Image (cartoon, rainbow, N blue to C red):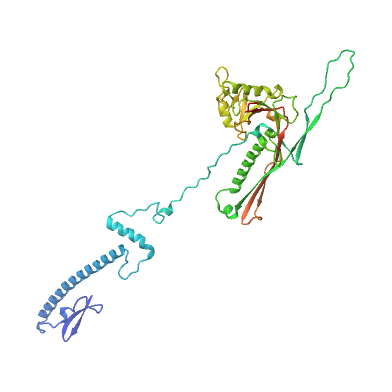
Length: 413
């Protein structure tokens, strides 16, 4: 919208906002050459002047727009090259991103979001945490499965009468005197209950923050360790603050009835540290089997390590047949000369003088005595900031019948 003003009798045009539209004052503001007494001529001259002014103003406006666009382009180029716009300070956090954009502009290489760069998207990629755990497997002992186990409540030992004697008897005639004969003699088996423990510290913060039930996990690990430790003691324990194993007792080659109670019979392979050549190995295993008298053979088992079993698995009889029989169906036991084999990695390896194979009726020959279960105590006070997971178990073991266990000795005699 425009208004007109009168100056010295001459009309001029002014913008409604009281400033010229652009450039120098319009020509209409200058003195007109037309005769003032001729309004038509003056109006025509004024209209022509206004038309010229509008053309000039449009040209100046177009030029101004081009200048503004050029300035904007230059400022953007400066920002892309990492130096900030004219008079603008560049935030330090954006320098790396601007440098990447600049590299893309120079080389044409795309700026990719990758897992390898945390700011470029790597933070969004989190590993999947499994709810299971890969565990190292340990050799378990079969001893608890094959020996006799008694559980007691009160007391710190288990006692049982043992009858390992015989009575006297003889033939007599009708009128022959009958003097007294020998009566039975009793012994007593005493198995003391020993103690095994574990005391594992875990920080309270770890227990609070972990996604695993570490308490239950540690309890399972300790119970497994207890079982394996007990199994080893049942084989070779010394009886001092631990169970006494059957390999800790004196041995002799004397047969039942000819050796004192408290000793175990062995059969020698005849070869130091081995089975010998030919069929000697299979023959010696048969000798060991038959050294266990008939009342004990029902339910008897072989006991050996896997390495020893590997050697025996290759032995053949006189007809060239393997004496080891592998179970033909899933879960079927391995058999040696018709008797089941139990693998016990606590048994000694084959070596000079080693008792690497045992054969016996373990239910009759060895006794394990337990107090009920594994006892647990969580102690958050004694070792702050740790929580002590304290566990203990009471168990004992000893040979119950020295005639029910036989040993194979890898020696010349």
